[in-house]
Length: 491
Image: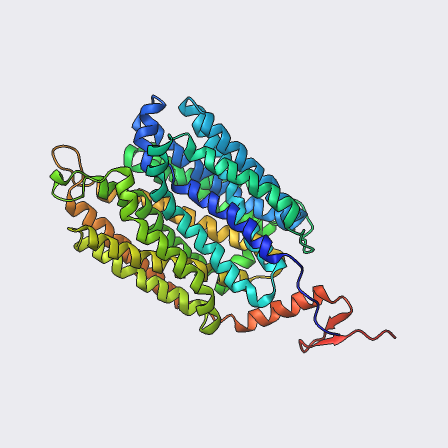
């Protein structure tokens, strides 16, 4: 029997997914350069306005794996429509917010959009022809990376031409379009993982993530030795093992711990954690470095818009290299691309640490850094998708994204401690503090490259998944013990 034709409209499906994922990634960083403006406009303190970022991060960390699991259970399309609609509501609420409390609630609602990541990767794997999966996964992963960088670039022009409310109106409108497009264009996946949500596991997962992320995000302000920080860290240390025990004993775990122990999965998640440390720290602190008044002995006295333009090469190279990553992975291997991207990211961080006196030096560094991030993030997603059965794609990719978020939280907190460890009389960080911080991030990416070498070959795993998908597509076929597809005997 000739092979079954791929399901129609996968190109349109990709366009819809790209709009949703790209808009969500923009929301991660659009507000970073304008926190001071939000503080003034919403009449709040500096410590309180940081919760505009923290609340979003916490919500995304909790919701991403849960929504990925729900999508695997009841259908990725219908869950994707619901997530896009929720993101639109959160964005519109943020655009209308006139107080910091409403803004924080809106950002919590927006964090539900973290579920877009596992749902998008799962739909690609279910719906696309096999030879198109790596390229599509790479492009979506590149959008996740480039959106974060592009948000830093676009924030200034949007605020200058309109006002900060449009930082949320624009994503809200885009999410409405994506939700409608998903309803009419994206086919519902035939692949399901029947079961129920383990709510005890969900509560424990939420509890230890919240305890950990609140501790590391607030430690620079409260102090690492503050009782509240130590108490939260202790709670995370207790709750995380309790969550693992519940998951291991559950017949229908929220996250399959056996899956997380798979060599290709845990090694890629380790790389993801280290990349989160590097990327989110750069997004948070490089604009601040560029906007520092040159009277401090460093920095460029850049405005929000000017600092965004300096970072534009990073966004361009993230997308370009990320899209190209799929072809490289097909020719060589996703592991090789991941290791190369990790190693490439070390050099520009060293440039930022030791050669940042001129704008062109920063531009070259950010272009190289974007290239490394784009290659590595796309390859990382490909490895995760290829490493697990179709029924676990949503959970596995969601957990990898979650681990990157956790890495970003930890990295940003440590970077804040390093940067503020030595201050000038006017309260600005010393140049040596930024040098130490960027050098620390280079060390994290070097460790990521070394961790990438531990990832096993996926050739055998990929062949097994191809047989699995062929069996689902051809119910009249059976897989015999030797692994060969043969026709069922009607007798």
